[in-house]
Length: 405
Ligand code: 7TS
Image: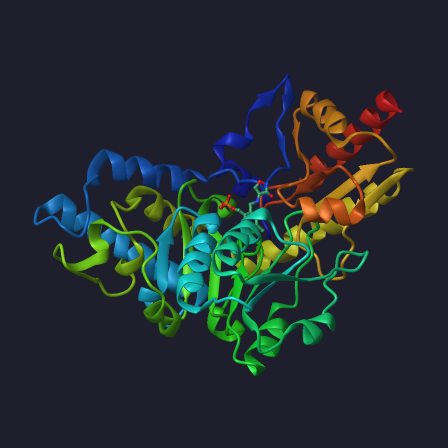
């Protein structure tokens, strides 16, 4: 039994009024609200444990170091990584991808090589590769999408070649909700010994990830989209790749020995964790994982899919509403437009009704160009949303449409 009432009580931010309406929070792809256990973990850390880690002989430092390394293990187990030193703490998905693009670029990309991404990437999985490609005179190639928002998977065979040095693909599109067949993509790339990076920012909150089963080489995600604090994220990398990549940033615990002539680098994972780490938020991420585990990823997934199905059916009944992204495999994201009404006008009216959605290009401008639209209204679901909230949302859209037509 999915006890939605009990779950909602875990999230203090959900129980507030916005412009005299109960908050209906449907902007979860941007960031999720935080359960009390995560907030309490931060309070506990700053009330009792706060200390710089790895370098202290004193009690608090040792406590904080142990807690931080335990958090790393919790994350390792959650995504089934083989080793805990394959889990690198970063600020989020964006930093994780920048790390790989920069370090992989320096080590492996040269003039004439190619990097392969898809047409549905978030800017965070486009721009870091463009920067690396510009620096190395490498070409960025793009796997196209079909009108329904699915990847044209057969085009991958044509696009992969001896020149391809890495493939970088989003697991779930933040603008369309499409779940990509990443296992198939990884298999195709590996047949030609090409490594694959997965942008999992939108996947971790919704589906169970097993990096060994996927056999991906890198997997990136953000804590704040999966009920954890902002400012912490993860780069998973296979040991053999992380060993081969040069450091991304210098300073702090990433060194083994420093002289003015030469510096040698620390072992994994510390080689990639320069400067004082974000300990409190790292503990918050582990707390969020434990919270999700108590509900169960399978339960979360099937509940969210029923919300998606319910909302999609109701929205389709609204005359003139066009859903952008109708892939067969979708996560709890619905993007839509209504005739020629500007998405931000709809978003503004919904806001006054206490309904939080996102409008615009969702940091995926090439997708908007593909559909020749300025942007969409996007509702994205989390484990705490309800069917009643979807009813309120749909009524709000009907009201907005009447006002704007
Ligand atoms: N990749 C995807 C697929 C994303 O959806 C996002 C953020 C990022 C990368 C970047 O994550 P960050 O935590 O490093 O910022 N997506 C969104 C969104 O859809 N609305 O706001 C942020």
